[in-house]
Structures are given as C-alpha cells and as structure tokens.
Length: 383
Picture 1 (cartoon, rainbow, N blue to C red):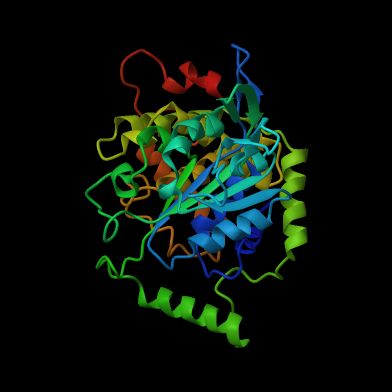
Picture 2: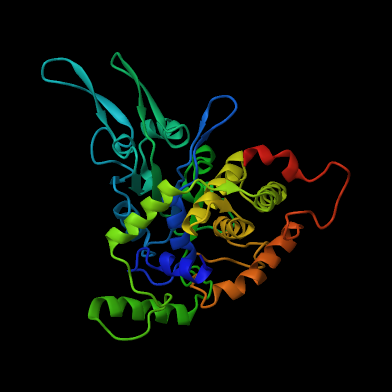
C-alpha cells in the first residue's frame, strides 16, 4: 500500500477534526495494536496498546476518545471518577439477602474492546494501584469481602487529561505536568501533547488557525471548498470499523532485521539522551515500539514490519516530546498536517532519522565504537 493511500485512511479517523495527522495516526495504531505472544517464562506479553492525550482545553481530546470508542465493536466511555461505585476496576457490594457480589468497573466491562477514560488524572486512589496490573498484565486480582478471583481486562486504554495548574510547563516532566506517577505513565505506548501554542506564546501558525476555522464552518454550515485532508471519499463508520477489525484479525506481522535494528537504536538513543523523561525510557518503550510497528504494518496491509514502519513509529513516539533532536526541531502533534506527497517525502524523513541514530538503511551502525557489536544483535530477542 502506498503512503498516500495510508494517509487517506488515517484522514478518515475522526473527520470532524481538521488536520492532526500524527494524532490520528497514533489513534489508529493504538486501535489496531500489535501481536500478543508468550515469552520463554510462559508469561503473556500484551499486544493491545494504550494511548494518553495530554493537552489544553478545546484541542479535541474528548472527540478523539469518543471516536475511538465508536470504532471498536465493544467499548466503555467513562471519566476518571467513574459513573458507579465500582470506578475503573471493581467493588464488592452486599445484596439485599446479605450475600456479597462483585460489581464490575469500566476496565472489566471493556474486556475485548476499548476503554476510553476522560479526565484520567482524577482517577480514584483505590483504582491507581489496581490499574497498573489491569493495563500491563490485563488482569485484575480481587480479594474483597471473602471473594478471591481474577478478572480479565484485555482492552486498549484511551485516556485524556489536562495539564496541572495554569498550563503545560515546558521545564517540567510529563509526570509533574499531569500529576500521574511514572509507573503509570510508562504503561502508555503513545503519549501525545496537544498544546495550544498561542496560549503559551509559541507563535501558532495563522494559516493553521484559518484551516481549522474553515473546516469547522464547512462542517456546521455546509460551505464549499477543498478539504485540508487528502482528497478521498470519507468511509462510513461501519466500513472504518470493519477495516480495523479485518487487519487486526488477518495479519500477524514479523519484524525484519532492519526494522529491529532501527527500533533498538532508537531505544538506546532515548536511554542515553539527557532531555528525555525517565517515565518514558523504560524497557516498556522498546516493547511499545514493537507493538506500534506491527500495528503500522497491519495498517499498510503487510505481513512484515519493514524499516518504513519503524521510521513512522519513531516519529509518533517523538511527538511526546516538545523538542525532537531526531526530527531536527519541534514536533507539534496538534498542528501536524497531512503531506501532499508522502511517498516522495519519506526518503528525506528516513535519511534524517537514520543519520540522527547513526545507522544506515540496513540498520547497521555508521560508526563502529569498540568491539562489542551492535546492540540490536544482542537485544533482538525482544522482537
């Protein structure tokens, strides 16, 4: 599948929002997910991905959560506080007859689908500890009122929250800005910052503001004019949902050696960088990159994860930082627009990222330091 066709599919995700190329791409990759497997210790490694949107008010976070829920055949849309006493996990309640029973929360009810959580920073204290197991091991161990059991929470979590205080502080980490602990943040495969630069004095593009205004008026008043996204007929929601389910069930992509080396080189680069957040540079970053690369291969209708998939996953992961050294500047997920000629632009993007990582198109190091070999050959077991 050419990149132009991929962008047409991505543009049809949440069509009510103009542009937001990286956000829509990250949303689709999270929905599609990777391939689950069992490691040597008989422990299941999840294939479902999780997405966190951190941004200012009015940047479309709630609309993206609702659209993600609608694209899944089974979904639960809730807030961090929760609509019932069960909250996100579960609670024990006493029946009129005196017997105890468990009331399932949002994560348990969303098993096999999507759990969309708005105002994620306001989750209850008794849910914070249990949600760690629910997101990573995808189970929920319960021992309440004499009831001991394990519930399944095999779902993708789509969460959104606002920065703490008056706005996002560029000098502080994501953990401090959101109030979420590092162990919880590390469980999200994709963290996207949706920041209104005009509020922060960042000189937001006037052209982008004009495109967004025209898109909103076109949706509300039926104005004529060329759409800002790629020129394609919009699929109905049912067809979009069917495509996501088809690629999820039909492809189990394997990661090729060049893609493996590019992913490991990016992981090593992030671990050594001084400006990255410690919450986002754990071993889970490597597992997340593999899952997202497999999801991109599925989106491209392929059985193999190539270097192209790894490059675009790196771009999506870099969107969680305000200043990307790999992309040669800042990446703003909120104002990212679709490229008119993505197939012609890809070689330039690939060469820029590979040069920053110090590897060639085959994933081999440009400069060999020492005699220990390339790290990708020693960590290839994660692929």
